[in-house]
Image 1 (cartoon, helix red, strand yellow):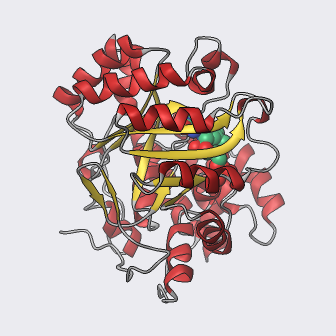
Image 2 (cartoon, rainbow, N blue to C red):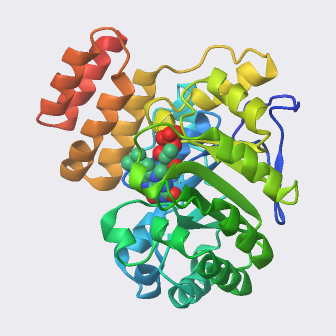
Length: 355
Ligand SMILES: Cc1cc2nc3c(=O)[nH]c(=O)nc-3n(C[C@H](O)[C@H](O)[C@H](O)COP(=O)(O)O)c2cc1C
């Protein structure tokens, strides 16, 4: 059965974007998030209205060495992966029973071009992604110490070489996700953008926090406005950071002039944010849509099926706690969910709220 996506009319805010040879149907992106954006979360994101969802960051070296973790992170969602298909009598279940992930947007991290070249060859032959992104934003010490992630913001020329290496091998467009700099005293994004453009990058996402900020403090959207000016309309510039509501989405587009928006922490709590944002940007109703509990129940079922009872129920604790945050009585419910002994208890707790 073909998968129906809700259609929205294009306007100055919501519109398709062209990334190299790929035309993406809209400009609302689901961010890469390590430990979160696996194939199941991405499928839920697509159902929630995301126009494109990225994998979490994957080690280019690991992929080049055929490491099994890297391979698993490249799993493309399809219903055939699961032993039981989700209930197809709901809108969400019916989507999950027929959706096949397309496009596949892969994010790689590496410290230099060599590993990227080998990883790109494997991507071409085995995984055939539609777009590949280079991570220049991860602030974690274990990644930065090895010279990857946000550490690259200290070396704009190396980022240029890495993009060139990917472009020389990959058969798909290449993008880069950057921070504003490594530290407040060295905002290197203008030089990084220049080098990325020279290297032929097809789109840039800017998360305007520095490495030393991690995920705290505010994202400085004035850097996004400046980045839009530097890019000069030659390729899409996607803004990211502190997009927590449809109103934020409109404000970022108006204040910065960016071409697209990338939602992160808000989208893992509420995948419907993409539809509510589109509805707001296009002044059009989306009709009746599943609530957070319905997402949570479907997510739990698929996660336990794919990861097994032990790993699935453990990793779902933080996810379910996020889905229910903001609901009446959520503090008590979160406590019950994170102390639940198994997935059947979690499922019963969720069913009780829905009834
Ligand atoms: C738990 C977590 C994991 C993340 N993993 C990645 C990642 O794998 N690759 C990446 O480029 N950014 C990663 N990020 C950064 C997000 O993609 C995004 O840039 C950041 O959260 C800012 O957006 P927000 O303010 O909307 O959350 C991660 C963020 C969090 C909180």
